[in-house]
Length: 418
Image 1: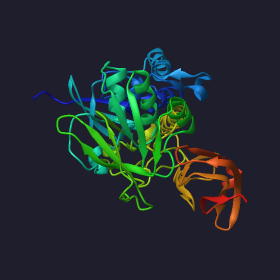
Image 2 (image 1 turned 135 degrees about the horizontal axis):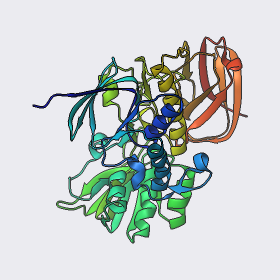
Image 3 (image 1 turned 45 degrees about the vertical axis):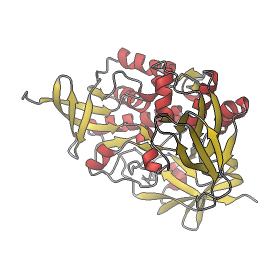
Image 4 (image 1 turned 90 degrees about the horizontal axis):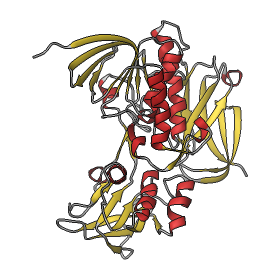
């Protein structure tokens, strides 16, 4: 058995997708001389390599790019800055003392880092996790897997398709399959509203006259070797199927677009505190987790709706990681931030009150003509008026340090504007 390869770096970045590359570039820009990116895939870029549709980069570059075009700009910068990266390298463990065990073609590595940035992204929820009834034939895919097969491998996965869930990947695949000549018969969504962005609803469903069935779910998958049909039914307020509302579609393919889960097995194993609502780490305003010197950002922290926000958030994590590696002291969060009525979650979880902060949050349900109220007990810190809010869209609320300094606790709640 070969000996473990030992090395040390200033900043180690786990993941080479949008968050990882942005974090690494930011760490280098902010003084970290020895930065290392560790990526388990064959190439840098992550999931965006298979996202060939436009819509990325509007905030970052001022133009609409495809996923590969967006990532290539970051890859070019990584190459230009000569930031080293490991590909085909699986991180097996991250420890509290900032040691990383990596399995690669060259053997096992033990990498000691001044700071670690966790950028593992997220994964799709599968059929087993939502307990879909029926047989287990071929032809059932997650939307992301279908996207990979079609866009990267050139496979034709089916002719007649039903999609369960109206997440953004599912909506985009409804359009993609239609353009490839398949017939998308229906999109069934268990919630009474779409879980995708309004622009994707318009451009991917309405423009192609693909029917959307809200408050519906799959109650039976039919077929032995291959999917032959699927039955959907309306659900009540407790998500229980209502008898007599069944609709059967003859199809050969089912796509699942039923939610994304932040990848945080490494985070949990390191003893880092997890927010059970987001599925990501509990962080302060510098994006530092509950373990000193370990930071989290991107979809590993919470699922984003726009990749430009992932990159911007990762910039902050990279900057914080560089400061920590250089021994520069950072403000510690002592003021807790929490969601109030109508708000599902708020990030960061703690702030110092000594710096400006931008909170990210999602609401619990679609609403119109509302106000988001930031309070400290009975004191109203600030009010933001919104004509429309949607759980699919992440909201960002900027606050100045003068507005939150001296607060005991920050609560953000939703209230009707009338």
